[in-house]
Image 1: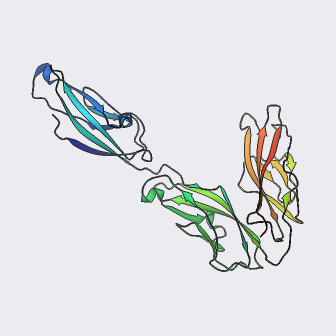
Image 2 (image 1 turned 90 degrees about the vertical axis):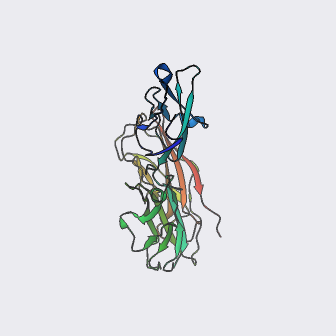
Image 3 (image 1 turned 60 degrees about the horizontal axis):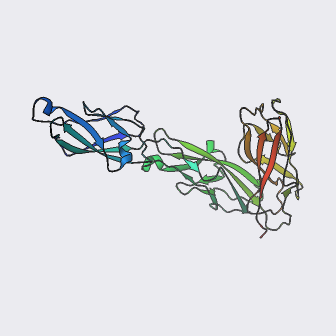
Length: 328
């Protein structure tokens, strides 16, 4: 018989495989072979057993698989001891293993990049838009997110509220201010050590009393050919637009393989391109007016490109999508 019918133990989810979880000990008042015990484990939920293994002689229960608090918070297993007598007699107990959360998941924004377009002048404290990230860790601290501007850049103009993720103005954005702002917003959790993620936010201002046309890229598809293994800063191609007197191009997210010249739209390689390294690249090029003329839409004009290095040393840029709304 066991000294208890139920026992509880707790372990952090990052303990290694092979960790000793529990030592089951039963007593048999018989002697000789009748007192020889054999230990086994089972569970109503068959999956619970797969996380553990037991030494049939010593009763030592060790970890067989890595624990994961996000998959299962507790495991309930039945430990049985059977003697070698005839007929065999058996006793059982329940072992409950609680899994403690470890900060092993980074926050994830629901978008890699955000773009907000607002009519100026923008008053003090106005909500420009909201960003949102999620953390799949369990627990108040590990999943609690705080937002802030990376390195405090533009923190004198904008503020990101926590926990809402609202981007608000800290000053009046009038006609004497810049027409565009590129922010980097960081979401950091409360774990130890803390984990974080970064997203880009483009804020564009426009004037209501100006007329204009909707700018677009001149082609719905761009095909650029380039031989792999060319040196960095090699010209890959040029994107062009219409409906804009003073266009400005840039990558919405930083890219270690390509860059775009803002004023000309030239796409350049930033490093040697090797198909065996990466044969498929995706990135976004956006278009807006350096001198603001009303508008395009609620979002900047953005183009998603796929870069594919082919086996015969050809790179194809395929324009996938042009996003803009109808004029209001």
